[in-house]
Image (cartoon, rainbow, N blue to C red; front, side, top):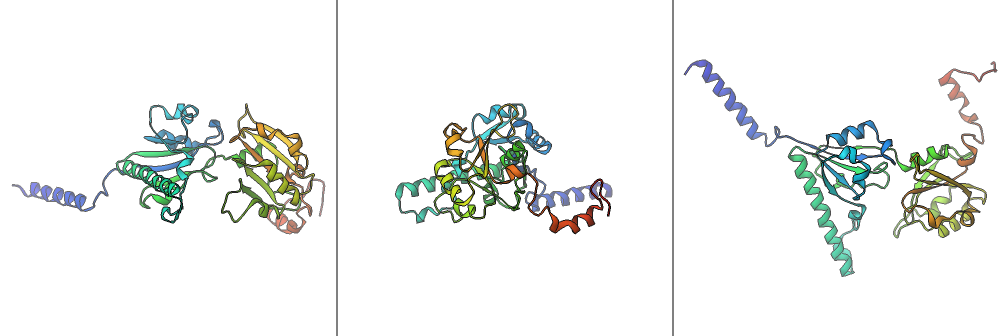
Length: 308
């Protein structure tokens, strides 16, 4: 055997040993992504579109999601995982006294772990898995995947245009402005065990944006009337971001229950906006006079027609 051939044998032997010892470093690896799909299909970001195109498997919440994104999904493998998968997440089944509830909690824990195991196996076998979620998944979306998946699984979240942004755009007013307020409170219906109940949040009289699933309107407006002036503007935005179905219904804290047919609103397709910002726009009580020096020092410009 020539010295040249002997060297090649040693080289390939060492390389093979390194591959075996690495325990999978050279193995193909996929990726898990949560993708914000916007409030309507035409509000998807370019990054979201690219991610879905690269996915081998997509996770959907409902059957009808297939229709909404059919052009992107094509013939990809589909798994379904809805919001009900979150039931009893964070609860120790062994601490539940009700036997039926305990059994349900154990069942849901096993169900979630089964989904996590499937995602992990798919990614480790080189497949890209993407959970497609309406709006922005960081606002009441399903993100517990990242809490349960091993930390070494390649993953990312792609933000989307959520209902908060789309509803604000629909009313053409910016919620952070409110004449004498700066804050925006994003919330939803009160649930048992919450410490930050809506009425406590109302005490600040800040702008409030309600994700309206299961919202008890009579109860909510009785609370609002205790903290906001009767003439405080409110707005309902139906199907925010949808150019064909979007609709804005304006009212006030005092008149809402009498003039808005809230029982007929699309259950999971509308937002409630409350606050002075709906009327005053970007006007400020102090005209941003407190920040005058800062603004002028950074922008070096004067209003047209004025001289120093």
